[in-house]
Amino acid sequence: MNRKEQIEILKCRPQVSVLIIGGGINGVGLLRELALQGVDALLVEKSDFCSGTSSASTRVIHGGLRYLENGEFRLVKESLQERNRLLKNAAHYTRPLPTTIPIFTWSRGLLPALGKFLGFKVSPHDKGAVLVKIGLSLYDQCAGRQNPLPRHSFSSRRAALGLRPQLREDVVCTATYYDACISYPERLGLEIVLDAERQCSDVHAMNYVSAKGAQEDTVLLEDEASGESIEIKPRVVINASGAWIDFTNRALQRKTQYIGGTKGSHIVLDHPELLLATQNQMLYFDNTDGRICIFYPVNGKVIAGSTDIPVSDPETANCEEDEVDYILESIRRVFPAIRLNRSHIIYRFCGVRPLPRSNSSTPGEISRDHICAFLPAGNGIKFPIYSLIGGKWTTFRAFGEQVTDRILNDLGRRRLASSADLPIGGGRNFPQGAADKREWLTSFAEKYGLSIQRMEILLDRYGTRARDVADFIGNAPDEPLRSLPAYSRREILFMAEREKIVHLNDLILRRTMMALLGQLSFELLVELAGVLAPALQWPEERAQEEVQRAVRLMEKVHGVKLASRQ
Ligand SMILES: Cc1cc2nc3c(=O)[nH]c(=O)nc-3n(C[C@H](O)[C@H](O)[C@H](O)COP(=O)(O)OP(=O)(O)OC[C@H]3O[C@@H](n4cnc5c(N)ncnc54)[C@H](O)[C@@H]3O)c2cc1C
Image (cartoon, rainbow, N blue to C red; front, side, top):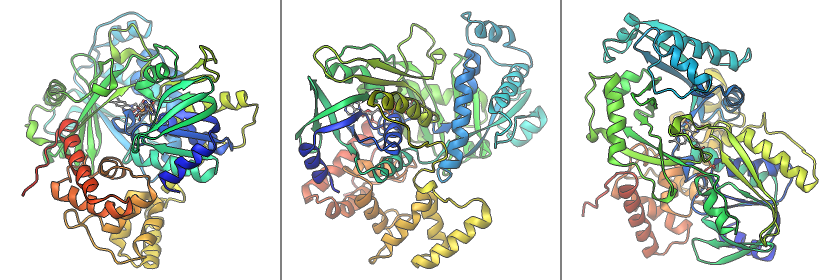
């Protein structure tokens, strides 16, 4: 069904049990949970799926080592359990991530840490080896006996400097523990949407549709693409609009002050020496102000971040120059021998953490737990609203499950199924181990007439959905893109036809990693728009507009200048 047909159906059938506003990871995760229970639901997202905060994370699937300092053991345990589930259920996009902490003192930080744990206010402090040992032992403990990842280990100063000679000379040792990372978070979000729609025919998700207002039993939606209005009559509304939650509630005639967002920025660097220093691990260390800094490799580049700065309006949050200085300086402090400057930056991004409003002057101390706030019908509005506050990529499934139980209770329905062991998208039947993978590649490369190398690239990008892509590619003549031969025209066409692309930006930022990996050029944008145009019925002017829109966004938001060479 295309967008037009979907909108016509909504107009004819405005009644829906659950309306979810916001298509970030919390919204789409909940949609899939509801689909599994056979509950009819509609999700609307004002932009593209996972284009808000969910596109701006560090991409780490983690238990939250730092949360132990605040005594949040329940959150750490839940996060570790969900991390392990994601490693199984989204095996195509998640992988274990060894994480190394460089340590510069033996015993510093013990007393402040104890004070913090007991609830006293303490200033930022370096963590010595003893404290890190206690923290990592607790972390291993929280992961439990079934933990599939190795326990932590320590390396001597000599070994640490042997492996990373660029490290600060006064390092006393390093500690390494395991978490996980996710290669294509936005694609995983999209796969969750596609799975939900496939699971239940009464479940729909529409990007570029925003919630604009409410009256009595009706929510007023607007199609951002055509300006058309749509009226929906939900029994329950879920406000999953993240950092926009209070704005959305206000549009729905309810005044709330749930959110105290903090923005976080990252930069992506093309820097072979820094890449080498990662040794395929994440580096994790405290900055002088107590914030955590990290960097780790992603497809031959290095992601580094992040900042944590209170903001009031998520629409205006951008990665600013002083944040870039801050991130570069934090790396230089630990790796002084590595020369870094702005010329190494190929991309930058920023998002606003939808944290609960708090009086804490230290953003890092605000809980990263999730809360579901309830507003009963009232103020002339006839439906209740649940607001999904906080949460993380790591815990979206658990959060969605908990909220679904409350909704099922409201609707007087019973739970039918659990998502705990349910694979997502291309994680279904994902080959395990080298031999299994080799067999998978050989058999499907032969079946679809592609080389094993090409099939491997598709498996990496789409998980086992690579079969659908390969099948589609094989149905007509294909050729590599002139400006980026790692992709072919029919591969792009597959995404245009099957993956809810509305704008060129959806393709370059979220269906692929072209923007993040610095692969864009003006010529590539023109070529991609040319491939999308017939599939999305864009006239010539619209294709040109899409290119200009992408150029503007890349420069204004991501610090990338794409000039035409004409
Ligand atoms: C810098 C940073 C680093 C992070 N790192 C990690 C990490 O490594 N691991 C981890 O697990 N988590 C991490 N997180 C946390 C995680 O990314 C977020 O908590 C999560 O993405 C929030 O998802 P969400 O769905 O609530 O919000 P969003 O993803 O922001 O989704 C809300 C959506 O609502 C839409 N919307 C708003 N108003 C309307 C309206 N009126 N109508 C329709 N739609 C509307 C928005 O466009 C948006 O897409 C990080 C966050 C940040 C900022």
